[in-house]
Amino acid sequence: MSSDGRMAGAAAAAAALGSGWLVATVLEVPTPVGAVGTAVIDSAPFGIREWAIRTLGTYDKPALTIGIVVILVLVAGWAQSSMASHPGMVAVAVAGLSSVGAWAAWASDGWAGVVPSVVAGLVGFASLWSLSRTELPPSPTPEMAAVALDRRVFLRRAATVGAVGVGTGGVALVVDQAKGSRFDTAIAEVSLPRPAGPPLLAPAGVDAGRGVEPWLTPADRFYRIDTALTVPRVDLAGWRLSVGGMVERPTEFTFDELLALGVVERHVTLCCVSNEVGGPYVGNARWLGVPLSRVLDLVGVDERADQLASESEDGWTCGFPTAIARDGRDALLAVGMNGEPLPADHGFPVRLVVPGLYGYVSATKWLRTITLTTFADFEGYWIPRGWAAEAPVKTQSRIDVPAAGAGVERGQIVIAGVAWAQHRGIEGVEVRIDDGPWQPANLATDGGVDAWRQWWFSWDAPEGSHELSVRATDGAGDVQTAQRTPPAPDGATGHHRVTVDVR
Image 1 (cartoon, helix red, strand yellow):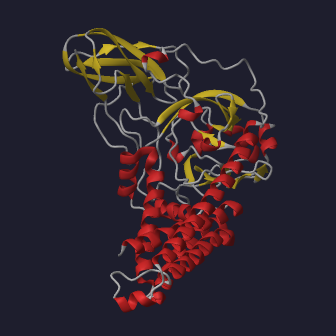
Image 2 (image 1 turned 90 degrees about the horizontal axis):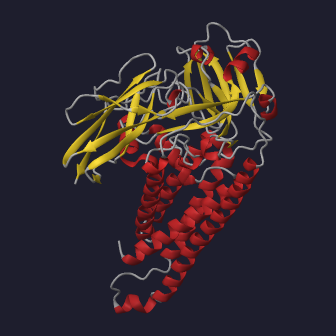
Image 3 (image 1 turned 30 degrees about the vertical axis):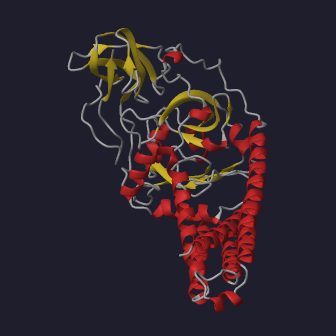
């Protein structure tokens, strides 16, 4: 492939992607790249998804998007080099790519979702055809040069096609950002009711200046793990929560009708099942919401319904035992986070928060339906993909300071971190230096059995390399296991260990 062919291919790909993005933004449907990316996430083998989360973390979605774009640019380069000699083959290839994007979008958005991929395909093929008419053959003979168009014509046309791509993409970006800004403003203007009772105050914690995670995790630092390449923007006026299935009185709630049932405020720690030992995918927040049990009492649950299933606006599903929603824990239909309406990234307008369960079976964001069903009749998104059907959170603890590999001065230093065992609470934390005995750490004020607990330990550090370990004891008296297991299929176990160099 000549350099001119690569340039023309990249220009044609830019024009196709930009036009598809602009149409998708106007129609408020996923872009072709986004639709294909979602299909890739849904169909990827279990091992590949685990590798992506473990290796790339929260960058897995941007990496997937970039990968799809790179593939499209490479295919466009091949198409450009083949256009003059095999236009039919190129037409079939472009139609195939366009069909893949259309098929991926059809499932969630119907005909409206198909349009951006069709437009992108037509623009891409037209660009390739136009540029193939002006590309100068490599090393032309004098006879060929006499009839070939001036290379400057080709360069101008390639630049024009590329500018079309950049321009339409830029317009799409501006339009999308404007819509996003209006959406964020609309969220900020949502008025939430005050919860009953005195204000819920955060307990005194460990000085965050020491590097320990703050007791309340700010929304913009709270981890986000989900399958959505594009965060849903839910129109509050048209939003409805449908509660049905094995119930006596199927009911739909508007946002105001849901709030009218009464709200409470609770501190709850959420964590992702993909979190490695000592990992970052855990956070603690102050959630405002309607108790899930109130909604279930209102609709009347069939005693045979052993699973509560839920679905998000973008079609993601999960389910957990119905008994957990009614066993006295503070399972919430959350509408607020840390004193503000839910941010878009964390599930506006309503999400589920269920203490003691990993998020993949319980923490549905952008909630739209709750269905009472059975485990025999329904499997949530991750269950057929290799994860356990039931997922109680395991007791865990983490060392935040000193960081792994850190160099510290000898003498008195503070080892500190957090521990969690939602719905059981943390009764004790112990620290071990190298192979020495386990020693009790100091615990910060208890913020409740559903919230994590900060801890610290003062250590007179001698010179040398030392391994620091931590373990927790939960409210049931069970000591965190030392057995190391990976996150799949139901959560990692093992002690968090860090090595530090004392100078």
